[in-house]
Amino acid sequence: MIKSVFTPSDVAELKERISKLTPQSTPLWGKMNVGQMLAHANVSYEMAYTNKHPRPNAFLRLMLKMFAKDMVVGPQPYKRSLPTAKAFLMSEQKDFETEKKRLLDFIDYTLQLGKQHFEGKESLSFGKLTSEEWNVMFYKHLDHHLQQFGV
Image 1: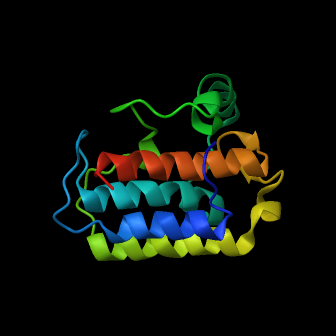
Image 2: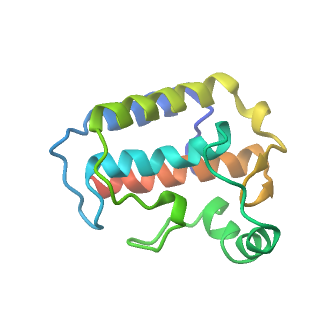
């Protein structure tokens, strides 16, 4: 059973894991450094809460629903070093403290909004999702990258 970004004790555990990261943390796999990973993790929240990222065109949304949605919102863990969408690619250096604070703020905001806020909420890429699908998308992605950095 996957943990929940809508449950205070699970959120506290996520935040504790994030607090163990330092600017010197190194990945167990992959190419991103820790600042880039935090910025990468923030993209899911940016897509949910901001207009920073454009909505994919109808054809791409259809392809994403058909070929990526089940992997993103389904229970199976991500495999290591999978290719990612362009919006999630981080090639520039990112400030660790800035990205860490942004992530913690997004996590708190998600908990504050609660599960009901996400029931039937539209995703940029996948259309309407259930609150459970939103939870899996947020939690599984963050958990994957925290494991990548050994926390």
